[in-house]
Image (cartoon, rainbow, N blue to C red; front, side):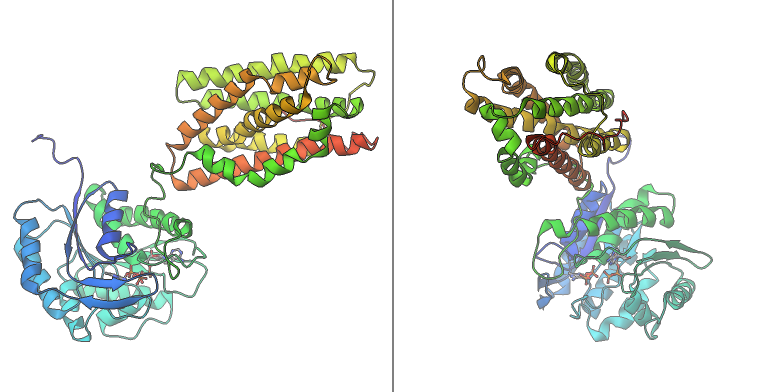
Length: 504
Ligand SMILES: Nc1ncnc2c1ncn2[C@@H]1O[C@H](COP(=O)(O)OP(=O)(O)O)[C@@H](O)[C@H]1O
Ligand SMILES: Cc1ncc(COP(=O)(O)OP(=O)(O)O)c(N)n1
């Protein structure tokens, strides 16, 4: 064994079960893991419940509870204990006796009494035993109704009254109270860490969601897991609450159950096991891809019937776009975590300015038309989006935003190439040849690979932001193809409304 102490906090949940994984020991173990703790669990009660409510409760004999507690305590050093559903007076007293014997350094008591579904999780005759247990805990985490029961008072009618109750409980039981404001009828959901002398409020927005099953279990387990490595309760509770708010916000996306769903305990953890980002993203833009293929511009470009002025107007906007796109690729290179990605995006930036700009110069240089106008509203919207992600987004978000320009072009280009036939005789053969080229497809493959690689490192929230950036870029791509062609095909290449591009 190493002399440096354990690599993780060893946290024990003593609680009931939830086979749907949202509350009870299942939630506690996920909360422990989410906070880097090694989780253990002693089961007090088997609960047949789901996101709609409790169907049945089976409380094993307390002798078996004692056997479980002793099996853990005889063998493992426990750094923190979280007590959840205890169910009966006998269970409460057995747990109290175990605490007296073992005295774990951190004891968090979630005084579970009634589930939000309205189902009782504690016998009416056990309330007095739970009141006595409070004095054996370091932190107690009541919701508003539970706080009233612990004091043998009515539920506080307001947040201020609840804080006052919490202060009185802290003083009388010599315990720190983490008062939870989830039951308030308000657009915020504050909590407060209250001890005999101080009250520290933890502010939080109220997430508009039905995914709040097991929030109390998850919060108390998170605080227990954090406390051994935090200087005080406020620090542990603040981090746990911030995490929980994100977990609640990400809950609906889990699509677990048709009632009050669970929170996503791992919302901040890299999305190992998820579909590759590019697979999810490509599916998300299936309609946009179909719309792109059906655009008059794309069809006329493929069969060579697009008016030359329309094509030149498009190329002119594209040249303006590429100037900004090159800067955002350079930003991706700057943010890249390794030399392979760094070099790829640096080459991409240079490629935009060299190879593709050459194509535009050749084309527009031969043109009789003089394209002095600035970016159209559509072009400006696209480059503004890219520049904003480049300025404020993470590496992963930047990659998701720049990927459509590679991927959609390679995808559409291959189909245009297939329809175009002999490029030598095609009026836009040089353009079609560039984007339909297998070399360009290989660049798109590499951009996709790097984006998937970046996505593997991020949590669910960041991945959702990546997806939003990708879809927005795809929407701009389709609008970009559509803008000049539609106007130009009707002889209305009007760039008077154009404004200069501001490089990102
Ligand atoms: N809709 C919500 N948005 C944000 N936080 C919430 C929401 N509902 C509950 N919470 C938070 O979840 C935790 C559990 O609160 P609460 O519902 O009061 O307890 P319990 O789950 O024990 O009934 C608290 O931190 C509370 O502030
Ligand atoms: C086994 C078990 N323990 C506790 C609860 C109650 O969970 P809680 O986190 O208080 O939240 P709600 O789901 O009641 O809102 C439970 N349901 N099951």
